[in-house]
Length: 428
Image 1: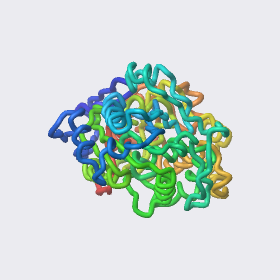
Image 2: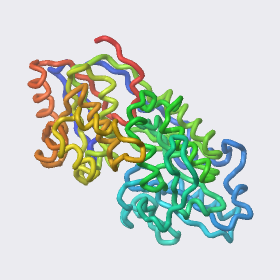
Image 3: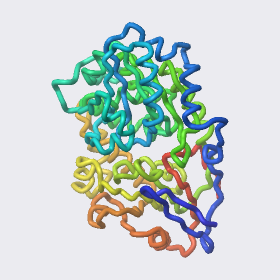
């Protein structure tokens, strides 16, 4: 059986004849065929919004409208979503000042070239666009205290809008349950201190902070509070298939619209898998596999499926290298992962370091299995991250067998690790 794994802007294929490949049901999203095309799905969602009020109606009488836009690390088809949103905004408030605020969270700033690729040249040329900077103290404002006790600080541009809306997409998220909705505000346009408090070691360690779960999730609770406090009134969120095509859209009141999308995706993305000694997965290709930092997300799907003491093979091109500077420094500076985890857990939310959450989750994965990384990153840097480098999938499979002392270990393929929610395991 030949399996294709997304890798960068292309893919890697492997013929598993001669290997002990275990059967696994594909997420329903892979075979799902929507009843309409991408633009029509978005249009229909906006015509029948959750909560009943169309964007044009919400905009009436408003003078300062801010539309939060996803950044370069997310495959949101902004060039499809933004035009109908902007049309409705100007239909309802033709004289209003409109600002597109790019939700970078704590990521690097999105470049003009990336904005053009994402939003289209016309929008970049004609709209007022501001790229959020989580460290720009002069352009942040405090809204209050999060349920977790952390300070809620967001972009002044968002806080001072008399209508705040957002676009985005919903995917399984490895500690917030699902992306989209309230995440446009926190972490999207929040200050660094707020993101650090929300991503505290205690919250990351909480068993409810997992892929596909919102119930009792403390990270989700903080995010929801921040979105309400910021006055987020309207969203358009989409669900994408493995080809990055829109297959579902929800619009309207943020909490209700997001719930619609999360419910659809939860049903479509859930899989039950057999136990496997080796699990091969990806971060869904570009743009999510731009760096090793982001690739930790896909590893968590493999973590849920692999046997204790097994091996995870992670394919991520990592064209931007390692990613988080602090992530690399934390891992490369401490060879003992358990000591590093203990250090994180001893910290209060106010003492959270940048990238600590990603490091903490990677160390949790490594407690269960060794990880072989197939990427373009230098071997020395890969080893500094406590990972095992490989330059091709065949090499990685050979190394996995050597690590396990087996010629034919049982192998499970999860081609898109960020697009699957592992709901349970069956004995092989």
